Length: 421
Image (cartoon, rainbow, N blue to C red):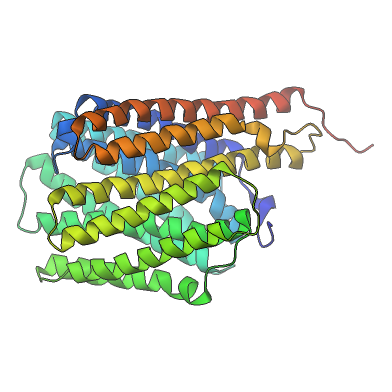
């Protein structure tokens, strides 16, 4: 099951959990915004909507994804990140403070906060990219690592465009290319960073965790080239002011539809038939991806603007669903692995780290929140209810992660360790 992984290179558990524990802490103010200001959040480009958008994609999703990168690079690539504890602390601190500054800048319209956010987030992302990207070359190579390369490059370009746009918000001087910059920023962030990394992860973990048939060699070989080519051409077209940039969206949409349909089929036909809450998250997440792609495509063809809001919310929920499913799988494994590797005879089995009923409750809260938020595009009262459900979900997530950490520390302090005499 774990063949080809360099598990002995895994970084300390505290690094990954530091990033993961920050996710519900950013999810809490996001949920509060949804509850208190549903109308503003459903208004495109409203400052509160932009604050919530960045809390979601930076504070929740990118926080967890960068934390996972610290683990994935060491285990998949076989080249551990140097000084992981210190470097993890630097990235985590810069990303946390930068996200808070940017959300605050949109919320209170303070120019100085846009400058501070640009410095902090730019530093966090540049530091992460220069730390991880060089390790992805010159050693082991496979499809997941290729996807990680594209994702990191996309993250860097997203940050660059974001800094340019933040300067416009700081002095309220929006040039003629502002809309093109915004569209490129969204495409590179949503598809190049979030979408690409999730696809790369799926190529590795869907087959490994759930014992499915592998994705086709053609798909693994060409998916990232297609995404990269479409994003580059779309960005150039937008910034040059040419028409028909939407054509590249259709190319990406076709690829994402193919990925989603293939993943659902692989999970349905999996050889390991044991019920697993993480599979529920994957199935729901990929179904949300299908909804996002179809809604976005319909909006391109002239449907109502509400469908574009549905597309953005569904895509965000797709990413969060996969992240929550992977957290529920990865955290118990890491707790068990680190304790077992250290020789603790009473290392908890994975199913006891996060009890099944708590994992199922988390899924139920997420599914309910997702339904409320999507229907809330048309019924704002339901959108506010989604904020309440989201707050409960993030509170339970924090409790689950904290419980796993406490169990790990308790075993370290009081467990029985094997020793050779």
